[in-house]
Image (cartoon, rainbow, N blue to C red; front, side, top):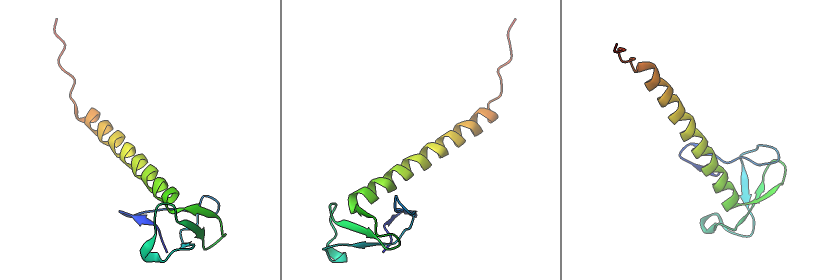
Length: 84
């Protein structure tokens, strides 16, 4: 199963795989502390760790977008005429 929110997919910290299997819980009953096992390399993490990773990626994307918008605004600003 992919852990995804708004087109941001969590990746395994070891192999960058994106498929995980919950351990000891049914898919419908996943909680923050549910252990998740990477389907590719069997590395373990928790559902919460994967969600935090998604949050970190979302913050990074937002900061990149803000920087791009600020750069575009700076290009659009016309310098004020100098007064003598």
